[in-house]
Length: 484
Image 1 (cartoon, rainbow, N blue to C red):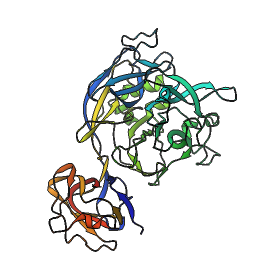
Image 2 (cartoon, rainbow, N blue to C red):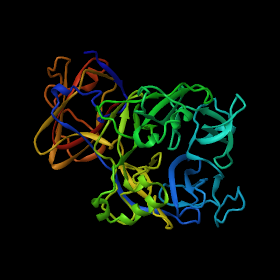
Image 3 (cartoon, rainbow, N blue to C red):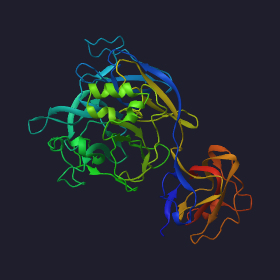
Image 4 (tube, rainbow, N blue to C red):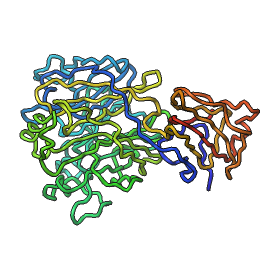
């Protein structure tokens, strides 16, 4: 087994990339965020019908959150922005870029769009200043062949407020979702929605927008999926490829929310899982949110009242092959008059670092509760804490594959009960001990606890050589590790 070079990079325990599963008895578990409070109310006239796809952009002043309110009369959305310096206190800037809107604090930045607008700040050092803010979404514009078509298009802006429709990106895909883009340090990567299980079309084939909707009622029988495409210049893109999961399941995913994780060389995603019941049942009529579902069915489409959504967590080392947790990361919660409806659990794209041990995550709720204000709810998520390897009340072990590290110290992001513990051993490739016994007992709850060996063993003696790590643990969770 070839050793994996990890250097000094933080290594999350979210998948089995480093784990020798044949020697490991601890188990994986997804860890949901903790809901805290409503930190803003969307209550303007254009915000009480429905709001979609919030996404967060960090800039020099703080944070911008872009979102799409839908007007009830014509269902034509615009794009608006709210701002915050700390991620807790949000305000609506009075921009008044566009006139003629019945909004006291006009915060519209793009006036007319079709669907699914995503905004990000481009860190590519070669990006022109006039294009540092990019928005992508469904729009109609002239293509090079002279024909006006609906495509996934790019809007550009120098300041995050004044956007110009720039150019089409691709016709391959469905686009009525939050399609995301990022700069990975070498090229642009875009994750977008499409369909498979279309009669007569192979699962791998990417169809353009016209081909997809030439199939009558495609959304009734096809499976919503996520595809990835690449570009060097944000103008010329590869044909989208279907991303792959390691779990053997095939179910619809509506959004993707893929980003590069700030603390480790890993992609993460929080896709919304689309769950449509085939028929209206007595259970639906017993739910507390029955009236909301009924109104959605009557005013949008018959299927919407039968749909519920939740959110899952996935991670990837290369951005194309993904480890996916089928246990929900975020659920609609205890039934009330506004939830268990199409649009629940749509996490805002992006996380805000609290400066402490957690990130702030957000949802805009009451998606299909017509005629009422919408809350921006804040959640706290432990850093590296999206998932873990853990042991319950009985002792269990984690043994890694051979790894090659740099540095002289090892720190863990972990949590235990008072009864729990973690002990660490360093082994050679064959599994024989190198560390002259185990570390001192590690217990408590910390995102950066140094592992101590008090038996004369020096970790630095093993740096640059293939070793295995063994974690003997009880009633504890291991989120990540890092050598320094």
